[in-house]
Image (cartoon, rainbow over all chains, first blue to last red; front, side, top):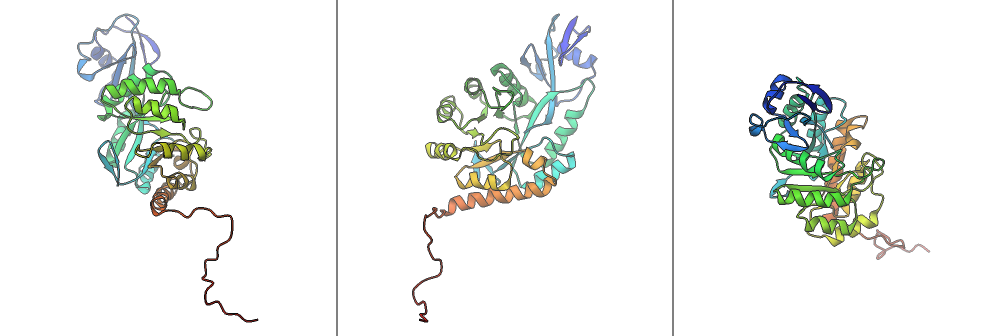
Length: 65
Length: 257
């Protein structure tokens, strides 16, 4: 499956968003996720089915003004 | 005591957390400033990375309120999604709403700002809109549900200080009951004192402290300036006069000629 994760094109077999995070070694409760520009809540990641071409953003706290 | 969305805040200085020489200096600057609210952002996390976790843990240790921002967003959709992501991560419905409209001046796209503010207010967010000093835009933001306004006084990071005192004065006069926070453009403690003397409720700044040679001392200086400006505003300042007025009483003056 072809996905774009944080702007980078990757090919990976990950049926759900939770599976993708695990496969890419993302962990912790300080992450926020969006698929195709919409928030996917933490509690919904395990059931959220990914499709070919999806754009995923994985964000975390950072310094800001 | 200053109150925002039902929360009492001991300090009228809101502080950004970016560009400090080190996390330790950031923490010391936050303490020295006396601030009650710090701003934070969301950015892409590297696969397997823990940068966000370290920063988040530092911020939580400061014990201040957190005001996440939507910095860098150029569209309504980006800003709204970022706000929702921030609410989930930071556990607060407070959001500093930025919808940037110009790459050079980083001035807000006020049309997108009003639209995003309406969407977020309806969704239960406490929206702090980064806006210009335009009165009509301010009216629209209030109509959209905003309860506080954050006008710039000069472009972000410019350190110019208040470039349009007339507009700021006019804004204060038009919205006497609305908390107004000057956000962006402050360079020196005297700039902060100046806008506080005009009656602005608070200031939000980052670069002027973070990029000072000694950010911790500068944070302390800004904290004092904000307090001084507020106290002066509340004390009723003398209006400028065109003629000299002797301060020493003239009655009882000796005559030697």
